[in-house]
Image (cartoon, rainbow, N blue to C red; front, side):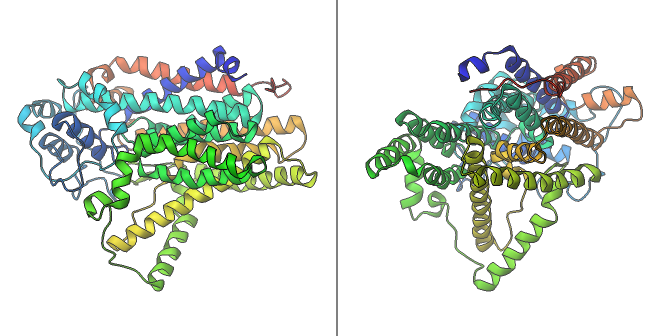
Length: 526
């Protein structure tokens, strides 16, 4: 059934549109603007040039080349010119080449690449950085600018793949091809998707694996456990552990899945299914994770001495955590850019937050309809799974932040992107909630059309916020010149007419695919 759905031209057009949009946003984004891009690029560079992953004990992982470029761009740690200064912009000149581009190109030599100036590399499992090596190698002879934009292409492809699985989730949860198109469109129009998804960050691969995990979990809820499904889930968790330690959060979510499907289990079946899940995890990630669990070496076990603790500290920490979620997070969740200096214009995040409240009411109505007649549909199972999974993920972030607080005496610093791994479930809950605010089919479709239109404008507002934070809109020529500076040759001057055209094609295609006549029946997937 799903094979027939995904082979349709509409799906291909959707993915092409997603590629165009993400590529355009990526090409407009300045060097090291994407969260932690400097640290993740440092890891890619270190692996390529040293032949191994950086470790916690390494004191020098920041190449002289990157150090000097960060100094030029104003993003050097401890001397970041953007932090708390959203008005800051690197000095601009006339023409498509930046004032310091020639200097940056001159830094591309073996001495600067192979010598290091302190710690900078992200210390994470290797999978994302291994996948990034061919993209780095393609531009290895070019400047650091060329290499960064080449490696970003990996994240763009990962983002497209993630949208594909969001589409499949939408088909299953909403029950129609159109539902899959709308859910995946909401996903790509969410401002943080293209912002993070167009940059160098292993979060993107983690988000892909978590989305695949969600899709497989839906198949389990729909059809029940099979040995093949259990094995595939185990493979995804194993690969995720090779990407991020957050892969461990998927384990209690699997327990939630067991709880939601408990009726089909006898003890023997439960043990066999558990073994099918555990075996690929051990094969893929055991070599990496088992030493962490048994070693007393802090560089291997990733443990530190607790310097802050006690009941009063926990209470104070919890109060601050809750306050952040009630104040800053409702704003940051919808889009925060330029080193936390810029957010979406207030009308958008204000309306989006109220949209969440309305959708929560609709989700409650949806659950009440099913449970009142003792009917557990696939959508109800998904709602229960989505709520449970997000609560587990939120608690895991809280627990990790509390551990960090105990070790270093401060919070890690919450970011909206920490909740993106389960973004597909969050947007699906919004869709379900808004649709169930009314039982009238026509009004329901009008509400969903309104939801899509709002997300289109929110995406455009987010993109404009990013651009206006770096570039001058005084005249088209000034904007085009500044947009071209500190970019590879294929993102300079007249090239922008192509990328801008493809971006507009992408956005307009998504609108056309999503906004159909409210009187048109959706093709239901059985």
